[in-house]
Structures are given as structure tokens and as C-alpha cells.
Amino acid sequence: MGTPYPDLHPDRDAALSELHARPLQLVDAGIRVRRIVLAVAPVAGAMQAAIERFRDFAAPLGIDCGHHGARQYSFETEERHVTWEFHTEFITVTWRASLADNENWPDDVGLDALGGARLVGATRVDLIEAATLPGPLLATFRPESLCAAAVEAGKAQVATDFVPDADGFTRFEFASGGLSAFRRSITLRRLLEIETYRTMALLALPLARTTAPSLRAVETDLAGLIEGLSDATTPEQIQERLAGLHALSVRSGQISEKLGYRFAAAEAYGEILRMRLAKLREVALGQGSSLTTFIGNRVEPALATCEALNKRIAVLSAKIERGIELLNLRIGLDMQIQNTKVLETIAETAKSQFRLQRTVEGLSTIAITYYLLGIIGYALAGPLSMLDWDKTLTLSIAAPFALLGVWLAMRAIRKKAH
Image 1 (cartoon, rainbow, N blue to C red):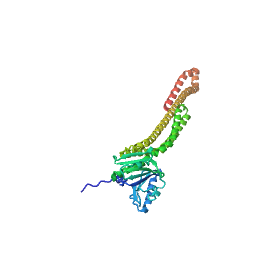
Image 2 (image 1 turned 90 degrees about the horizontal axis):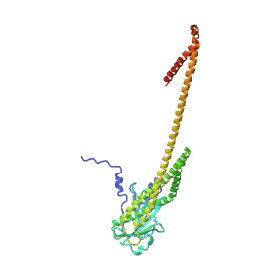
Image 3 (image 1 turned 30 degrees about the horizontal axis):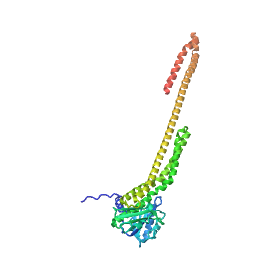
Image 4 (image 1 turned 180 degrees about the vertical axis):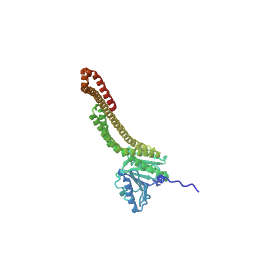
């Protein structure tokens, strides 16, 4: 009897499938490859809806869409090989055809199924059969932004100027004749991904620029409010400053919420972009710049701007929280002082009541003694007359004893009450 087969982890198949989620497609030289990058709406379910639209497009054409968890779909038309890829927040549609294909927006790649997705980037890569780029071809690029480099240890060359054509496509020329089909396909994928992630990473910069004035306004308001904290002496003024800080906290939170995802995505895209550029192993040809240098000189400052803005938001939030803590502490101290004063007033009132009570008790003792002596006088009037004793002298002698007796009785009653 063999060892029983262990239970499978519920995510095992997904983890294994991820290795083959986007398989490499081998390509030959002498073709033209286009890719468009489209951002889906930033709402829940938008990407799944886009996948369902593609499946609805593919079903009548007999295209095998595989299982519902797939993220890459490929199919053939009469003139093109088409691949759709669904990422976290964007879609890429890539198709390849002959170098004679001049149609940038063909009808057979399924563009009608894109729905409300918006175009972010478009790339065209011409794979020529030569191992080096001919001079006349390099002359078709703008010299001020020309990037020309040898890649794959000098076995291939790439050139571009990152200038879109009339249809918005950025053109790359890729001399790949000296590469095997495998290395050519890998390098092609890297070129497409470099342009894809460069564009996606830079989406954060316009948002940072439009949000910077709002952030500066909050910083300015906070500086003025903090400077005026020392002038707040009354509870009303303190509450007013606290309400102002809470309002600034809401504004800061709204800015952070607006920028948080976009900045995090830009950082991730920037890291992928750096890795793809490093894998090219490029060396500048002496005409223009290398892709790494050109892109780095433009993308890195943009990402640094986003990072700096993100740090400003974090510092702003920390300042607001400290201001709120200080005011809450001051309010707490004021409440303690007020409570102390109330307790002192209560104590003083208790003392006054105690003194009044003692005074009343003293007066009560005297009054009771007075009435007691009156009763004694009436009670002893007959006997004193028969004994021929002086009534006044007798009451004078009895008065101290009567007073002492009343005082002792009052004391006993007070102790029993306590």
C-alpha cells in the first residue's frame, strides 16, 4: 500500500498556470508588429466586463478562449496573428503581419470589443532581416531624440525616436537578422513591454501636476493654522482650530486617496521598466542615445516627482495628526483644570456646610438646654418651695449639668447617624 496522495492546495493550479499565462510567441524576421495599450475604467468589475466583451466577440469566430481564468488569448485572421492580454488595469492588443501591412487600425483584430477602454500607448516594431540598421533607415528618425543601440551582445540593433506618427504609433526599427527565433522573440517582447510600461508609469505625472496646487493649498492653510495655535486661549478658539485641522485632514485624505493607487502603480511599472531595459544589454551606436539613457533621463525625474509628492502627503498628514493631538491634549488639560476647580468649589462648599452644621448644632444645644432648664424649673417649683430652697440658685447650679447632658446626647446622636 503506497503513501496516500496529499491534499492539493486550492491555489496550486493557479500558481502553476501563472508560469504559462503569457507564453512566448516565436516570430521570424521580415514582419511588422503593432501593439496598443488601453486603460479600462477604474471601477469595480471593469476588467472582467472587458474580458466578457472579448469572449462575446471571439465566440462567433470560433476562437478558443480556453478557461475563464485565462489572461492571454491568441487567434489568427487571414492577414494577421492577434494576441489580447488582460492586465490589472490595462489591456494590450498586439498583432503582427508582413512589413507591407500599412493599416494601423484593422477591422479583424477585435477593436470593436474594447468598449470604453481608452488608448494610452501605441507601438510599431519593424523586424528587418538585416543584422544592422542601414544608414538611410536611421535618417528617417529625428536626430534630436534618436535612440540607436546594439542589443543582445551586439547581435542585433534597435532604433527609435519615440515620436508618434499621425495615428499615434511610436516606431521602432529592429535589425534582428543575427538572432535566433527564440532570442528575437524575447527581445521583441522586451521592446513592446518597455514602451508599454514606460507609458503606464508616466500616467502618474499629469495627475501629480494637477494635484500639486491643491496639496500646496492644504500645506499653506495648515502652516497658518499651526502658527495661530498659540493664540487660541478660550475653549471656543481651541474648538475652532480643532475643526480647522479636521477639515484639513479630510482634504489631505482625499488627495491621498486620489493619488495613492496611481503612485503605487507608477512605482511598480517603473521597476518593471528598469528590469526590461537592463535585460536588453544595449550599447549605444554613437548616433543618438541608448534607450536606457533616453528613457531614464525622462522617466526617472517623473517618478521622482511622484515620489516627492507622495512624501509631502505623508508629512502633511503627520503634521495634521500632531496638531490634532496637541489640541486634544490642551482640551484635556483644560478639562482637568476645570474639574479641579469644580472639586475645590465642592470641597469649600462642604466645609462651609460643615461649619454651618456645627454652628447650628451649638445653637441647638443651647436652645435645648434653655428649654430643658425651663422644664426643670417648672418641675421643681413645688419641691423647692416646700424645702424653702432658692429656685434661681438651684437652676444656676443645674444649668452646667443640663448643658453637658444635652451636648453628650447630641454627640451620641451624631455618631449614630455617621
